[in-house]
Amino acid sequence: MRKSFLAVLTVIVLCFSLCVSVLAADHPFLDVPSGIWYEDSVEYVYRHGLMSGTGADRFSPMGTMTRGMVVTVLHRLSGSPAPQEACPFTDVSPEDYCYSAVCWAYEQNITNGTSDTLFSPSSYVTREQLVTFLYRCAGWLSVSTSYKLSVLSGYADAESVSTYALEPFSWAVTHGIIAGTDETHLSPVSGANRAQCAAILTRFHLLVSGSN
Image 1 (cartoon, helix red, strand yellow):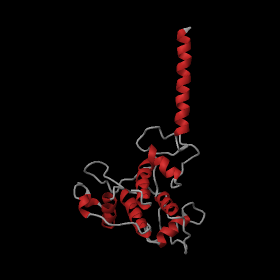
Image 2 (cartoon, helix red, strand yellow):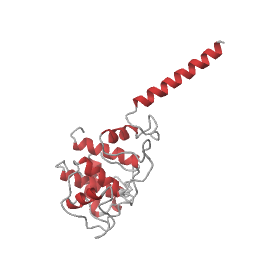
Image 3 (cartoon, rainbow, N blue to C red):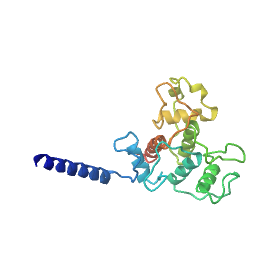
C-alpha cells in the first residue's frame, strides 16, 4: 500500500514539474530543450519578434539559416522600412516573404547579390556574409562600427576571410557578437544554423538597443 502511494506521489510530482517547465518557457517550441545552450537566445529572438518558428511548435534549431531569413530579421529589427524601388534580382519576386527586406537591404547597401541579377535567398548564409550584413546594418542604425583588426590575429584561418568581410568580422569579434567556431578558427565560409544565428542576433540586438 505504501509503495503504491509513493508511486502515485512520484507521478504527480513529475507531472507538476513538467507543467511548471512548460509554463516557464517563454516560447512554444518543443524542439528547444530546457537548459540547452541556445534556449535563452531562442526565447529572446522570439519574444522580440526577430525570429519565428518553422512551425507552430518547431524552431528547427539545427536547421539552415538562409540569406533571405537573415535579411528579413534585420529588416524587422530596423522597423520594417518600406523600400523605395524594386529589386534588381530575378530570383526574388514581390510574392516572396523576403522581397521587401531584400529590396530595402539592397537600397541601403546592407547586402549585395551573389551576382548582378541573383540574390540567392534560399542559399545558406555564410558566417562572413552574416557578419557583413550585421556590420552594415549597424552603420545604418548609427551604432558603433569601431573595431580592432588585431582581434583576428589569433585565428589560424584569418587569412581565408574574404577582403570585403575583414572589417565586419573584426567588428563582430571586437564587440563579442561572434566568436570562432573554436579557439583558433573563424570558419568564414561555413554556414550558421538557426540556433547559432539566434545567439548572434541576440547579441547584435543587445548592442543596437544599448543593453550591452
